[in-house]
Length: 264
Image (tube, rainbow, N blue to C red; front, side):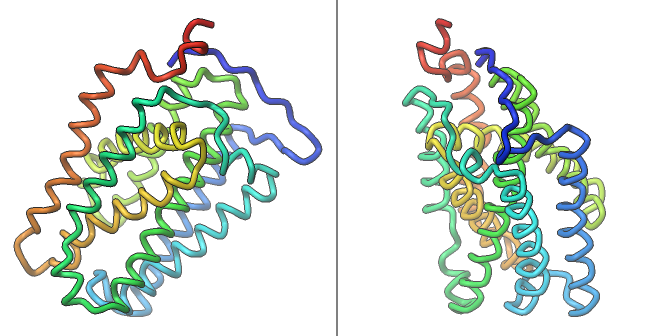
């Protein structure tokens, strides 16, 4: 993944975003989620997601505002098309990345626990996690990737730095989760690379956004909603996605770009 990329010129409808401005956009995005979540917790008195009310106020509201902010920035910059459509193809084997995620989601969801929670809870949690997926993918695989490409980084560096930034911002979870946010940030960086490849191989930002939301939904069904019980064993399946794909990509890392791009 070392093909040099040209710097995209700014046009009348497509604005450029400097690194400091991108950092500011990310900070505002995080502030909306973190401060909004804390505010909702104070108002509701619930600090978990075990009820429909808690999910609605603690997730839907702050995440919905953050999602609207993200796509508001994208629209202002005139980046809607390049965010939603990726013109950098990969080799066909990279499809294994979203396929592995789909398998982990289908077999990792705790269906029995969801049945006990009721349909309304399931729908609200699904919407909340899709807000996470579309918001984070829009911000980091959308805006973040385009910012790095506009500054002339090779595609390999775009993948690396967009993933590192994605992981680093999750250190903000230290506000509510303490030092446990550090290993989470490292794991999230790896996940960011997988979602970046999903964006590339699917030629857009839709599949990775949906899978991101569903993957978070899967993890939540095996942990948060069963907080008073033993962890659901099916959750081990999505966790195994990380080492499995890491091994595959370590072996195949030099054959991600199309043959014509590699030759050039």
